[in-house]
Image (cartoon, rainbow, N blue to C red; front, side, top):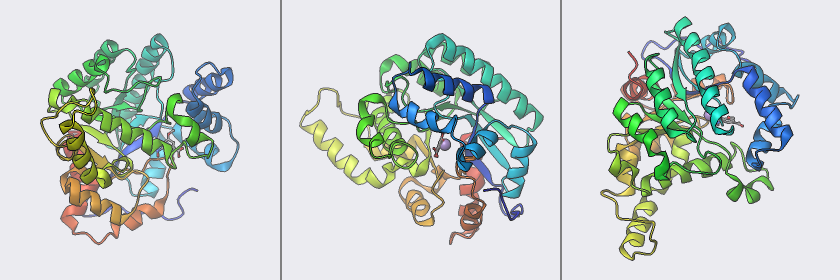
Length: 351
Ligand code: 1DF
Ligand code: MN
């Protein structure tokens, strides 16, 4: 699975990868213990980390080793695939599965470790702040603390103990993110217990499909709850080609308007704009996991070339050929530079 060819730097653009995962080995041990204890009661977590924390198959073994390294091995893999810069995030589900006090402490500890790596390799790494959404006020404080490190965004791995950020009890996080001008990367997690049964019984709960369903739903809930009317400058990034929402835009607009007009749901209130307007004005998309020219071009067409950017999803999809294929997309160089470099520089405010 390691790179067999070395991909050279591209003279026309830097390759900035924006959804790149890491995790200290101790966190993976904690995941294994949480899984073994059965205490969480979340079949999605048990499926994901029951597998990745202990399977001896080649892929999970590779991923465990790569996640834990923020040094020479990661840099060598980046060099082998021509990646100039990684925007790093604590892997999913981050600290969100732990209880409040443990999650708050672990967020601090892991952010400190990430800060050390970013300081050591400032041209190669940037960091996003891991937070415990279950403690919104402490999360806002952690954002404040980590902005002093120069962290560039916030990583949230979809639901927290089955709860969504559309619930106003979490909105202190949005308030802080907007005030500090920090984008939130809404990264996948497995569907929560209330949703997961038909996914897990078919083996479709993880990155193959469940991740996208859960995370697309989460973003849509944020939009329809009116979060962007309340926080109009807030920017949310979603991976995996927008978790399919660009493809749904026409129907979302039609059905949302119809539902609102008929006052069908008490919870579905009128919004200032169309659903698709928020996707174009408050959402950025990365192509993590989808090195596929037609999907990238479709998103560029409907969301805009200034809102679609590159992500490898290292180490989960470390496939050197993907970089070659994306370099060879039938796309003018200026647009390719936006995709690989400029959109990321703009949204993460890279120097
Ligand atoms: C997987 C994929 C796992 C992604 C991830 O974190 C992850 C996977 C635990 O393949 O199981 O971030 N991903 O974003 O596609
Ligand atoms: Mn990912």
